Length: 376
Length: 75
Image 1: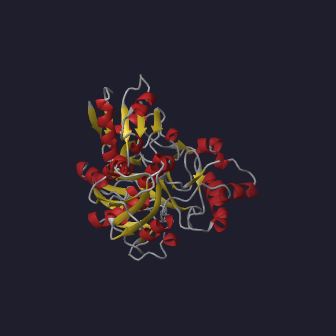
Image 2 (image 1 turned 180 degrees about the horizontal axis):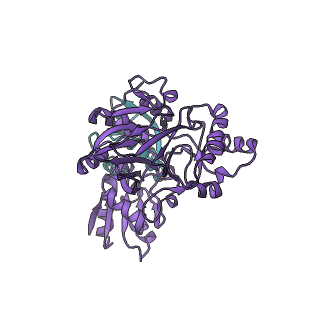
Image 3 (image 1 turned 90 degrees about the horizontal axis):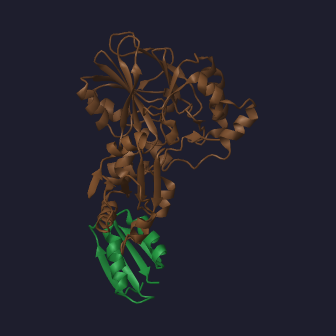
């Protein structure tokens, strides 16, 4: 039997279960970016090598593989191969509905926790791209931080939970994905906040996100304090939420730290990054729960689906926080960096409102991994 | 460029442009050239990858008003 597997179901299995993936895209696309998971095994045989028969694929699929998911770029080729596998006698075979295109756009919401005086915080995980965004709600009002381009999942969440979006904020000018912040603000009437130092060239009106002010959501004591923490970008701003959570943007991740070079100013921003991590963050309570804007590897997703860590634990374990010597640190974050995210310059231009690509172009620009971190 | 066969695969989505190209290749001789027209943007990477895998050679490719044209020599 052939079944369609929706991205939501694929996400559940990737986080909580097992999956055998036959990726039928060409080798270059597979090498650039694929579905990963702790219990995911994947092989790559391009569909054009399976047109005359699927024997080579059948040989490589383990006998005890529970579910076989065939994956391609948009769906067509995975269905084509799944049909052939079915005809060749494979019992249960799935194809990924919408392909990698849909996978890249799927947002997986997970509740992080409750806030001290009512309200709660959710993490929206864009698993296919490693991007994390947040929704904070209290007393019928909500704020969204670092929204993904696809605004529908947030809008449905707001409607289902009877929430009014009052604040939309980006921790920095993103280079790896197109921000949905402006669109969300336009649709809902919420205010769009950006760090002014990152927004000097934007072509639209925004509210400046500055330190010292407190953003209140609902009429309870839930407070979001912006903290200026430059380094990934010159304007990068973190949020201290309810004295419990530190939304660290692209400055600090669970397993790595941010890279300072996506605006072409690595040398200038290294000392800012070091200051933000080694002085500013060090001065904060070690019991804060760090909620970053990305994860790099699937093992950063916990069993319960959350990506988070205690700040004190990161100072003990995160390798990016263990570099005593400033020169060694400079070397680490400016040399041997991974490739830049795809189309990062066009993405920055789009987020500034300087260019206005159509939806298909925006989708193409975002294809691939986020690559915002420095891994050792 | 000399063309021995033209395949119009416009409007077809993946995997059909490659499936049809493969079939068209079976109908020409080694050294002859197939000219493929497709509107599927996936073809940009897939046609060269398929050609490499099948030992054919992409001699040239052009894009005109959303139509991708490939000249592929049978290997």
